[in-house]
Length: 298
Image 1 (cartoon, rainbow, N blue to C red):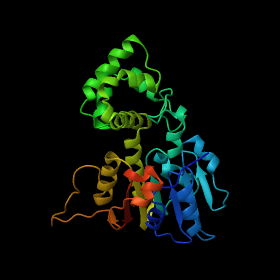
Image 2: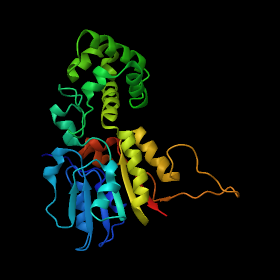
Image 3: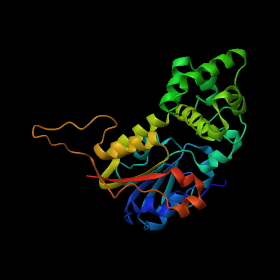
Image 4: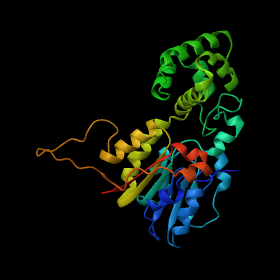
C-alpha cells in the first residue's frame, strides 16, 4: 500500500524524548513512518506498540522483534496494553485524522475528489457508515453533526435538503449527496464547504471526538511520571480538546482550586505549538493544517 510521508516526523518523535530502553506507543500506525523513526532510536531492550484499526494498514507491520502491531482502535489502548503485560509506558504518539492512503482510495468514500458508496469507516468492522448517517439519522441528529462537527451555519438547510431528497430516493453515493446539496456549494467555496460536510459525517461515523477523549484520559493513566505525549491534530475540534487536556487535564471548565486558590495539573507543556515549515507543506500538502502539541506527565 502506498502511504505518504509522515507529518512533522522529527519534531513529533523528538518530543517523546526517547529512552533507548523505553516502552512507546504509536496509536496511529498507518504506513509506519513515525514507528520506524521511534525504532531507529530504541536500543535492543526498547519496545514499541502500534495501534491501527484500518485493515489496509496491517500489511505495513514492521518485521522487528521490538515491535507489536495491535489491530484495534486506540480508544482501547489501556485494555490491549494490559493484555500484553504493559501497565505503564514512557511515551505515546498520535497523528490524528485520516491518512493520505485513506483519502487516496476512492472506494473508502473519504475524499471529495471521487464518487464512491457512502462509507467513510476507518474500520470495516464498524456497523455505522455514512450511508446510515445520511439515510437514517433524524433531523435533529443530522443538524447536530453538521453544526458540531462541520461548524456549518447552513446546517439546518443542509439537513432539510437531505431529508426531502431521501424521501424520494435513497442517497447511496458521494456524488448523489453532492447533487442533493449542490445549491449550497457555490463554485468559489465548493471545496471548503464539501470538506466541512465530509468531515462532519466522518467524525460521526468513526466517533472521533469520543475516541479522542477516551484516548487522552487513558494516556494520562498509563504514562509514567515524566512520560511524554506527542499529538498531531488537523482541525480545530481535535486541537481544542488536546490543548485543554494538556493544559489542565479537563475537556471543559477549569480545575478545582484548593482553600488557598491553588490547583494542580497533570501535565507540563513541552515547548510551544509546532506547525510544519513551508518546505514540508510543499513536499506534503497533507501537512498544511497540522498542529503538534507535546506534554510531559508530572
